[in-house]
Length: 77
Image 1 (cartoon, rainbow, N blue to C red):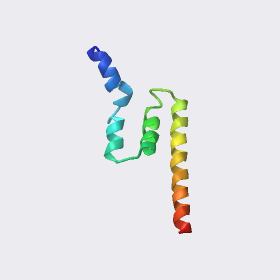
Image 2 (cartoon, rainbow, N blue to C red):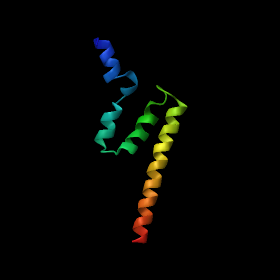
Image 3 (cartoon, rainbow, N blue to C red):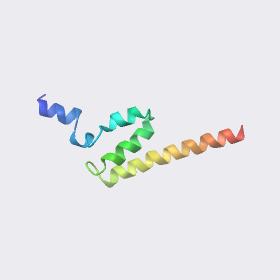
């Protein structure tokens, strides 16, 4: 693979606006779902627009449901 092709795979431009998204997610110790919220929100302008915002919303709603379920379990114990 040529150097420019490898760069497009490993470090596409939409990954490197400011800090690389994976570095940010890792630095905060985020879960998969939390990281995907950040990933889709931070890249939507450079990738799939509204579709990525819908994906971010799906992961955020997943996190909310998970937290609500956890809170209900704690309340019932």
